[in-house]
Length: 218
Image (cartoon, rainbow, N blue to C red; front, side, top):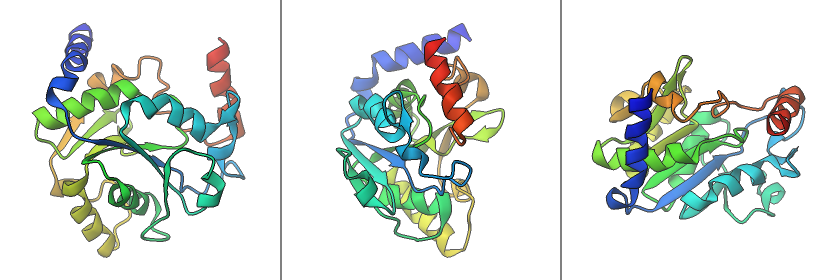
C-alpha cells in the first residue's frame, strides 16, 4: 500500500505538468431519492444543503461546475450551471449523457450528489492518469465493482458510445465501456483515496445522514 501511496503522491506533484485541459465538475442530482422520501441533495448536512457541501469541497479542482437536475428552480441558489435531462426517464445513464453533453471541459469529473466524502485527490490524480495513459475514462474499482458516479470522463470520446447505448435501450451506466479505453484503478489502488471507507458512500436514508454527521464528531 505504501508504494501505491508514493506513486499517487508523485502523480499529484506533477499534475500541472501533464494536465492543461479544462475540467468540468458535474454533480448528478437527478435521482428520485425514493428511500429518503424527499430530495436528499437539498437536505441539510453540516449546516448547508448536501449538494452545497459537496460542491464547496470539490470546487477548487474545477474550471466549471454544472448540476444535472430536472428541477432547476430548486437549485438556483447554487453558483453552478443547471442542466435538465436530455433523455428524460433514462436513469443514471441518461444523467451521465446530459452531464457530458452540457460540459464545456474536455475532462468531466462526475460525482453523485449524495457522496459528501468524494475525493478531490482522486480527481486530481485521474486528470494526470487520463493524459499519460491515453484513456477515455479513469474510474475506481472496489470489491463491489466500478464507481461510475465517482469517475473522470473524456467528454468527446464518451458521448457517442453513450448516445448509442441509449438508442439501443441499454440502461446500465457501464454498458458502453467496451467501446472506449478504460483505465480502472484496482481495489488496492482505489483504497488510497478511500482510507476510511467513506469516499464512495451514498447517503440514501435519514440514518445514513445521521451516521455521516457523527463521523465528523468522532
